[in-house]
Length: 368
Image (tube, rainbow, N blue to C red; front, side, top):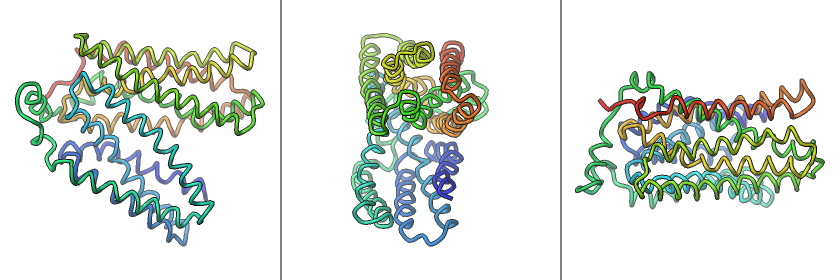
């Protein structure tokens, strides 16, 4: 029953990524974000009143529905309001926030549950989230395209933001499928690390739960730091005249390659090296974190970016469903982590191939 309740949020979060993207492309970021957050907060607060499992599942599904608008809307906002030469850092900081927020939230929620119980925790989290609507409604314009300043590059960005691509053109583009495959491969590794890395440290290397959690946390913190720095460095190269697509592809491929060093842990029996490769691989993936999202924005016309991000994030969530289950199945069948780690390496190599051969400027869908 607990597993059912915890997974319910991902059903609607995954299923509504693409519809949310279409909604954001059509109506802008302001009102979809307001509606999504209001639904998320309301359902979270109402969870404090649940009296049955079906009611809890419905409320968790509503939370997932509200959250489904966040990534498409956030990426559209960055696409419209940050020039290409600043976009990598903007995406990097956003992705860092998506990691720091849950980490801080876990600490706060654990304290609230310990002090007051789980029902007050849901009530407090839901109501406090509504405070974010105050600055959002005050500073974000009703029409995000019309509010862009006119003149020079900003005028061109405003015009470009209205250009859309048909769904047929997007789905028939090699770029879209390359991005989908690459995103799946990226997130397969991330979800493997989130769900099984602590167990790997504990079972294979004999670490305590606290120590394994420390190494896992350090790896994700390193990944977030590398993501922000890599986004900024890519921006500086682009500002210096380098081709945006070439720069962001290079960082993305380098990140996947660095992450593939995880497989070296299979070929060494030295515990220190095994841990090193596991932590280094996740930190190295940070080279791709901001740049693979920014690369999508470089290749897709602004008027359709939220829908494309919705498709991209759907692939990410499919990986979140597959990776934990498949890893557990392989460990149960073989009794070791060797096959799961080799599978991670396989998917990362597939991801590299997708960005090398499919994600190319000449394959990008054209605006209507």
